[in-house]
Image 1 (cartoon, rainbow, N blue to C red):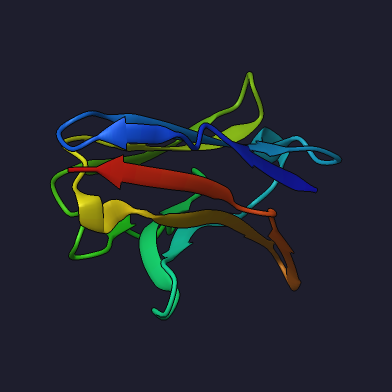
Image 2 (tube, one colour):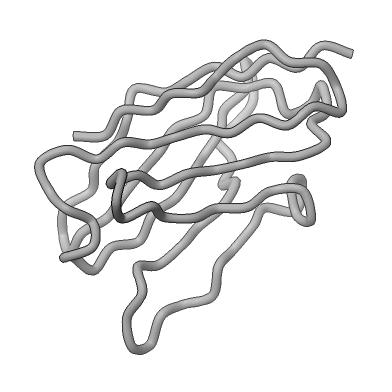
Length: 119
């Protein structure tokens, strides 16, 4: 199970940090690919960031063009979370943010957390 948190209403230029808490599996013991997506009303779902668990052949960390240079995705093995920080947020960052983790053939999703950026 994945549960996102950290969504809030912020002003343009602020930072926001989102957390995706995994339960039922310690992420430090598994090979996984973690992603943060977002979806704004009337728009398609957009990949924000992607991170592979530390392992041989680990793929590159990927950021969507709209957040490149402003976003950072990371894992916290102690807290068992996948985190996303976006700096210098813009009104166009307003969306519901979803966490996804793939472990082998299994894919887990969270329920989403809302980020609203006011001008």
